[in-house]
Amino acid sequence: MRKILVVLIAIGLIFSATIILAEEQAKPASSIPGPGEQARPAQVSPTPPPVAVPATQGPAAPAKIDTGDTAWMLTSTALVLLMTPGLALFYGGMVRAKNVLGTIMHSFIIMAIVSVQWVLFGYSLSFGPDIGGFIGSLSWFGLNGVGLDPNPDYAATVPHQAFMIYQAMFAIITPALITGAIAERMKFKTFVVFTLLWATLVYDPIAHWVWGMGGWIRNLGALDFAGGTVVHISSGISALAAAILVGRRKGFRKEAMAPHNLPMTITGAAILWFGWFGFNAGSAIAAGKLSTSAFVVTHVATAGAALSWAGVEWIYKGKPTTLGVASGAVSGLVAITPASGFVGPMSALLIGLFAGILCYGAVLSKNRFGYDDSLDVVGVHGVGGTWGALATGLFATKAINDAGNNGLFFGNPGLLGIQALAVIATWVYAFIVTLILLKILDWTMGLRVTEEDEESGLDLSQHSETGYNF
Image (cartoon, rainbow, N blue to C red; front, top):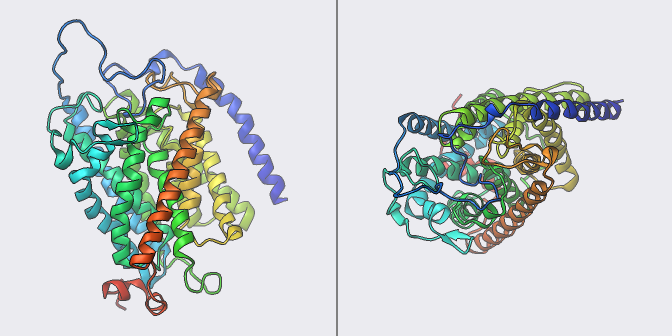
């Protein structure tokens, strides 16, 4: 009976897709963003080749800062920064009480490590002058040349430093996502070194491929408005590599490892939902039609995913759970991220509905494969990010963002192939490099705490403190 209900739900979603797509195609041309609005750096149509500034007669007009755009970007930056403490609470509530501070500490220390790395050389590697389509040069080392005037290649109406610090928040939260896969068992000192190496050797190159001027995935015409490949796939597949190499927690599948504080987790999920509006709508790099569209579809997809996850959980387990609704909401946020600047509300609803179902299935499947992804990073971010990137190739339409492209359902099957190539490249590179980094660190520093330290908990063994004193 449960299988029949799941099949009926899937058929209903597919049937509704025809109606939704018809509505999207009927949208008037007024949905095209106005001339003052911008897409994220990677969102330039592959044909004709991208140009930073439209050709004009005579000398180019000096770039002019728009105060409204700048205010929105600074607000969005603060929203995205808030997501990392939100993630700390989301993860912190799901671990056992003896590991709550150790889990929160992972996210908090990343905010410091990656911030310093970013202003020294991370931003330059990600967005600096291109070297062979693979990486940026160190020309902007220490923010040399990154001043308060706009850079028209990336953000023509806001100070270059506003764009830089906004991007820093993406670089911060991405390695923080990985920590859910290795929670409750990794040495803190090894974790610190891994974070710095991973941000430099995995995040920065992929960010340049997809968003940097001259990046090879950008030049293919792949669309990633706010980080489906750069943030979620890279962290999700790296989490898989980490879970495999670090190994299972002591007592995995033999003793109860239930979340110790679900209200903390729900609070973290709510903060993530709130902050994600800066993540997606802020990626328009302007305040206007496109940012509004991204804001709306982000909310719609998230609501749809929360409902579909709760629905399939209700069917499968007999009752919906608060953790399920929270996880479903996050899966919707993940899936809509790459598509948020290219799809309309009804397409976003479909993306969210399918995200909740797919990610729930992926979380269940980890038991079949036997790896210990403690907090379901692979199932939510790896699978959700992959679905979102491919869904962009299905549902993207130039009626929403003329600087993007049409997807399969709007007459351009080629975009889906390009999206698939971007997904595969990100999966392969992130997985291999993460494995190599962790293997080297295992040989030199060791990845895991001792069994005794794991038994006593990371709060005491790694930080000499406890989260609760009752």
